[in-house]
Length: 212
Length: 318
Image (cartoon, one colour):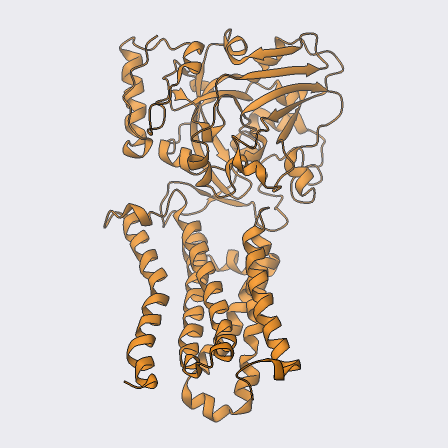
């Protein structure tokens, strides 16, 4: 098997399974909650709605940061095939962000359009979260090979939105924490490192291995 | 009395059963738990100490009729930052906490001051059970059967002077026992306060038990405040100091974020938290598809307490 085949038949399915794992665990949690199965390790606890919303949101942020780590990883390891995993990672970020919003709108707000609209307009942390989700939509829609070819350089430009929306997503997290900001700060830190790497690669390209 | 409540982990029993057990024990004339048993909780190897049963008769006039939350929900979903900021943390991190021996310092504007053991403090008070709503500032709520006595009965024993306009409470500060205090999330120790008329109100309750048993550590053992018409953070836990003061105390959450948390913290659906709505709440225990319920002014206790705030701008005094 050459490296390309290894990616197609081994790494890609493995990464897919890893990305899908949180969703499977959440599904087990829901099944335990409603009493279909009894799987205590995944019990969603006393406030399952909040737990689920939070889990989806955190997973979406994790996926975004992992997606942003692909380029530095490629540059450090010269493992160019890793780029072929990026689309899947990004789409998983969109998937979890959508689940995050859906669980909020459905389980927390019971699809009360008026209440949800008021939240989006009146609560800044929800406004920016919604903005980040909306920004993910065009990225997901244009993620196909065909769109990539058709859009050419504009594709790259459009997909730089991920920097903005990830920042908004982390801000959204930071803003809704009551007092203990240690966890959101960790996300800020990781994001800062990933962005700093890019700045370095842009302004001091010679010092970045793997870049010609 | 001898305590032979079976040693079962709270997770193994449904709330209903504990509750019914207790009722049956009471009916059989079994229970005569006195304050002394509060100190008699004993650790036993790796299993959590069995909590002593308390004799506390239901005060129906001060109880709502909503079904209480399960013991498990009440004791595994806690905001008690001294034991960690996740709501599952206190149940785990409070296991080694020692609520006995315990003493409470009473000082300030009162004739009777000093350091009292918890036994002396509780001795004269007959316990009663009250089922109260609890509304957290985070927009969730529970229904909890507390055991305790009116705070007024306790405070009167210290003969507060006319200069006592407020009463301030302080939680234990001991980072070895309370690992959450190693982090400066809040300004430790936790402090709360009430205006004297709020403190003396018949609804204001000093709790020592839950579901007919001694308070578990994560719920604020051995002594915690319950003010049902205020947001949960007013209900200060594991109290070591009661001080009568002339000036309005600065409570911990107000110190942490004065624009978001005030001194009064009365439950008020019309005044939103700056970041989220207080108009509705999610009742814990309703599962995944539970509908949000409308939050009531003063958490449903408006009839009893609204008069305390007559003429006050509740939007400013949030």
